[in-house]
Figure 1 (cartoon, rainbow, N blue to C red):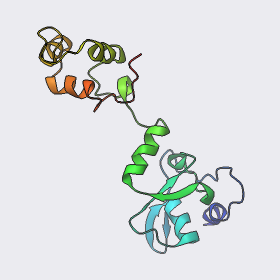
Figure 2 (cartoon, rainbow, N blue to C red; figure 1 turned 90 degrees about the horizontal axis):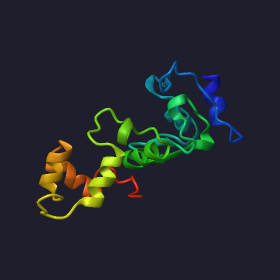
Figure 3 (cartoon, rainbow, N blue to C red; figure 1 turned 180 degrees about the vertical axis):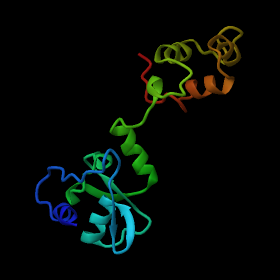
Length: 149
C-alpha cells in the first residue's frame, strides 16, 4: 500500500515502479482486485467508471503507477497508445504475417484493377494469399503504417 501512496503523491515525472514479476501489477484495494494504476487513480480521483486508466509514459505494463503519467481513455485510445509505444506486433514481427514489407510495397506498386497480370486475383495467386489480402494491402486496411518508398 505504501508504494501505491508513493505513486498517488508523485511530484516528479520519474516513473514510480511497482514490480509485477513480469506482468502488469495487480493489487487489492477495498476488497477488489484491479490493476495497480487503476488503484492509484481511484485513490486520487475516485472511481473512473467504465474509462480505462492509460499511461503517457507507455510503461504501465512494466509497473509504472505515477499519477502524473495516468489519464483516462477508452479501448480505442489504448490501442492507439499500444501502436505508438511499439508494443503492437505488426508487419513481419507479427507471427501471423503472410507477406513481407518488400512484397507489400511491390503489390501496391504493381496493382491495377482487374488486370490479368497485376490485378487482385493474379497477385493473390502469385503471392499465395487470398484476394481479400491483396485488397486490404492495396486499400491500406492492413499494413497501413508502411510507407510505399
